[in-house]
Image (cartoon, rainbow, N blue to C red; front, side, top):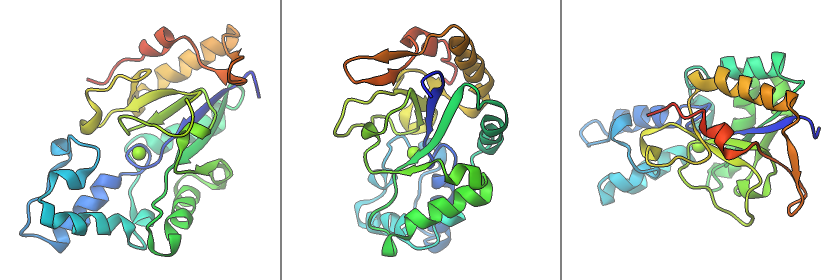
Length: 222
Ligand SMILES: [Mg+2]
């Protein structure tokens, strides 16, 4: 295990098109109300850029049963998951790491996320599904995530690769990333593995990342 990169991959806004489905349902339900386009969502919490009296209706949609199972895959994501599964097992130990809705009706969100992964990515990935409200307690080398800032109970062991979205364009993290960048990240991780550059960080007793400058070479999204 210690000679592989532990790669954590977020779901919503990275593998699943969370906003696209929300927009579709909201516009269908409230056709006369304003709602931002994808590019206009420049804050992570989309309800905050909606009129205040509309916010409960925005918030309600992702908490409804069936929402998470109805999301569409993000372009390019499934091909990368397939590539990781089939071609990268000698240097990458991957996990899906997602934060579920906890206000969700009967907590069906957890089940729907697992079912979504099995349906779109296969049972191999459901064994690698981590659902947590605090990603900082999950160890890894890299976390690919669209959330601009990720905080929690611990200092994370992973470097945050920011998955490009309109609401995180001012964040660099430990590198920015889209699925079209995957061949570059894959090549870099393989190269670092072959150079034996994965090291233990004694203070956390965890496996730690490549040097930040290695990751920052991935800087692509703009
Ligand atoms: Mg996300």
